[in-house]
Every structure is written in C-alpha cells, then in structure tokens.
Length: 110
Length: 115
Image (cartoon, rainbow over all chains, first blue to last red; front, side, top):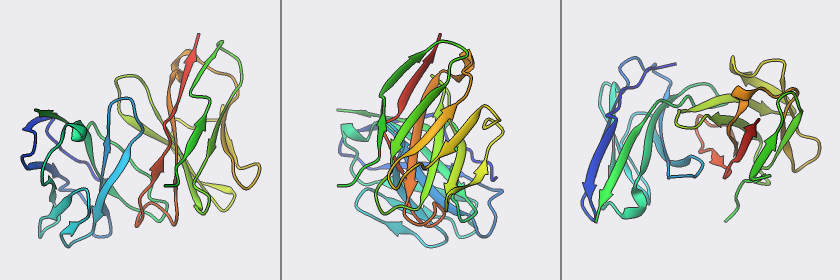
C-alpha cells in the first residue's frame, strides 16, 4: 500500500477556502486517490476520489499533481461542519479496502 | 437517503464472551466491510466480503473473528472470545460495486467495551 504524508493539523476561518495537501509519492499507476473525512464521534464519510484528472463534486474539489505523487483537497468555503479529520487514501484492488493513516485534523474558526 | 445501520450502538461484555455486531448495509450494495477504531487511534481495516465470501482480511482478523451474511439484509461480525484489546469502535461499510471506483458508506458504529 502506498504511504501518505499529511499535516497533522490545519486551521481555517469560516467561509474561507481550505487546501488540504497529501503526499503519496509511492502511489502505483492504478491506485485511485480517495479522500474521506471523519467528523467527531461519527463514522468516516466519503468526500471525493480521482485517478489523474482534477475532480469536482458538491462537497469539494480534488487537484491531482501531474506526476500523481501528491494531491490537494479543496474545500471552497469552509463551514463549522467541515471540522473533521481528513484522510487521503490511495486505493488499489477491486475491493477497494481503505487503509487509513492519521489524517489531517481541520479546525474551523467562526 | 439510504444509510448503513448498526446495532447495538454500545455493547459491554466480559472478557472471554462471544459478541455479535450487526449491520444492515444499503440494500442494493454488493461489497461489505468491517473496520475498527481503538479510542484515539486510526481507523483499521478488518475484512471485506463479496459474493458470500471473504475477499480480503487484515492481520487483525484472526481466528477469533468471523463474518456472515445470514440473510439478504444483515451482515454480522462475530468475535468468539473477546479480549480487553478488542475494545474499540467497530464500523460497518458497504459499497455498490467495490471501493476502488465507488464510495464506501459507513455506519455510525458500535462501541464495544470489554471488561
């Protein structure tokens, strides 16, 4: 499984954009990059995933570096509800088992 | 919106006892997973299940653990003889067509406390 490096914690102000980086330099060519988050006292929640191209959905955008060794999750306008631990997870195999790291704890200030 | 449900929300048991944690995945999903999270630690993969058999399992998922899909709706995790270190939050997840291309939907978890 590819190793990931994420900042332990980040802070943002409410209604400002947040860029959460992830380094996955050992990713293989067929690994998809998934992002999940875990709000306090809840189960993990899917955010977004991609392979090579940048992706957008209603929750966030995912920018993937051309060499795929890093990616950035972009929350366009952080809300208090976005305070959570964010996990970047390279996923391989059709089962898509998720191997979680420590993630980035995002705090959002009003 | 469909969701994964888990029961009970909290289970307290004595060391050495058997426990069964229950999950109802989303109805048209085909891939099922169990994860656990010891308090203050990261989420750990336990096992994946597809087509009525285990697809992959981690080192944690030893002979004390088993999974079953006894009917068309439930997915269970059994721990045969609980140990103190089995105390954790256990999350069930399901996916429509495999987690590589699709999101996994997680349940709210069952908190297992082994005394």
